[in-house]
Image 1 (cartoon, rainbow, N blue to C red):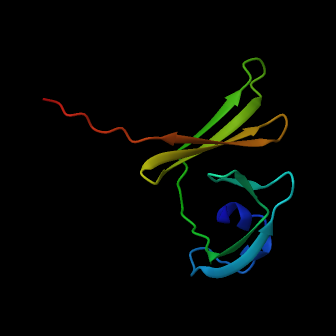
Image 2 (cartoon, rainbow, N blue to C red):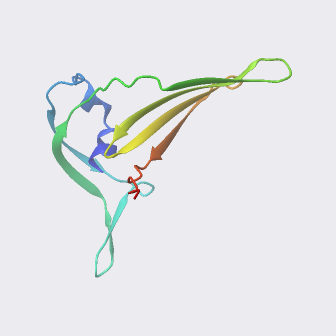
Length: 125
């Protein structure tokens, strides 16, 4: 909740520099009828109308090399249909791949996130 709420307040990031000391922040987020949290209790669900946050905010920048690039072209006229750039990196014990798909006709870029859980080694006798 802290992470998603902090992104609603871009001014929190204004003086942050990548890979520097974290900044102490305190802010309140008020939720509306369309966007809110509910906590289930033994009595009944309780709707959260606001949260006071206190914490540290930092930007951690990590260089990740391009692991794959591909381009898809039309068979008929050889024009580009889309381009894909992929980046794979370890995250919390798994390998994660980010794929950026640029669609030539619309100019849109779509992001896909894939998890690759580590498979345990099997013992061979």
